[in-house]
Length: 262
Image (cartoon, rainbow, N blue to C red; front, side, top):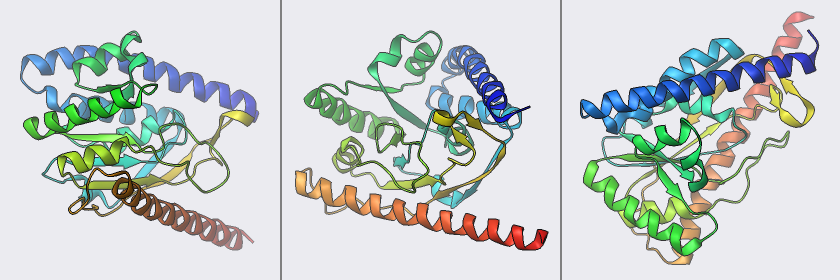
């Protein structure tokens, strides 16, 4: 099978699995809600998707720093966003008592929207900054009241590229963390352009590393634009350094494999 056919084959399998999991998620959401376990709906559904989809598309994800996912207080988890395939790494790491943010348009997507609504996802109006900030303020109050955490893609949009880097961060995650006094736990999935690249129709099997970084305290920060920018820059710098370190490790490993094969 040539690379293009392999891309469409794996992509179709991935999307089919995602669709089936979304339908399954609605049933899981209803069942867990009945038993008072709706705070961990997304954890169970995410893990189900990873263990179902991972062998189908041939991806295995190793987590480093997994101990930082077991924070007992409400936490803002932030990650890098390369493509829709990132849902796999969410499935591998997603903690209990955690939810996600999503653009409000997804609320009306069949199955997926109903699942997200039932599992307490936070829908954001990205076209209205004032409205988005109000949503984050309410989210901070709800997180404290229900002892919940949240995961946010800090860049806000995808950046599937061969270059090691990230787009500028949106500030919503940092406003939320400061308003609630929550620590921020950054994480990065190593660049996987060599495995998946929609623009050139590439979707190969492989192994990836997801690195979870130590919590960043928000103590002493205010909601001023200057403080939010400082906090955002601090987290982004740590994530970039981790991405570059993972890239160097991958390069060294690839070089060593070539030497061993000679």
